[in-house]
Length: 302
Image (cartoon, rainbow, N blue to C red; front, side, top):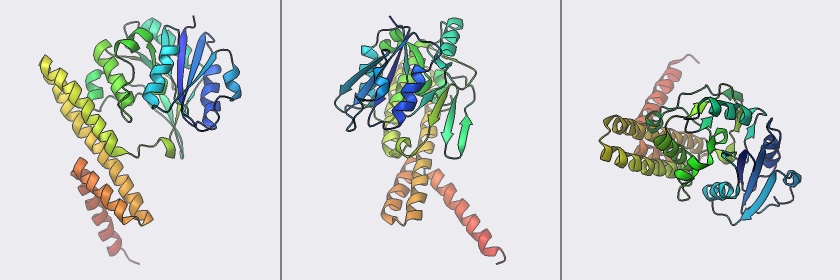
């Protein structure tokens, strides 16, 4: 029985699979298996040369979404520990070894995660080591845990039901919140061990759907906190609602600006309405800043 099962959901991964799967096979620990779940790709994934490695298992399913693919991958694995890696991310070689050591030191931790590198067009930026708690995560103040950095005990994964197949945008957050609620705080390693690539195909473009799912998740946790009479958690959830509305309104503003730049006035109107509905303060502040800048430029000597 391998020590760690790694699950990679793949949908038309193209060149990314070489990077992600290669980084799994390059780990300093070799006692692992990797389950690649092809979620209805239209390209040929099955003939990828790295799938011939005896530690890799490939399975294909109809396109049912990333949550189902992850759950299927976990169910096919056979190990004590489970790790997730998105098809377009990459691990550094000591990632799993460092996490297993951290969990030996903190066996009470709900899961292990690592800092990571945001791989941006402008260059990499390292996230800082974070102290993550259930309340802070509900409030949107707990820092960002990259799912590709998570290592969790299989029994704990199964106890919270894995990933919710009904969620398409906030499934990672929902899964991590469940682990934090049931099993408590995680443990973080000290050094970045994941390269998280930010590009057009994984950017959050459907912010309205993400905002709706965030509200549903917070409703669920709010009902539990209300039944328990937990005033501190209820306050954290109220803050979380404001934080998520502001975040998604800011995303609407970004799309509004892009639409104006492209001359797409219908799109601009849609994004303006969505941004105002989510958090009008974001739009009002942006408009006020634009007016100040315009007046300053108008008053500047030519």
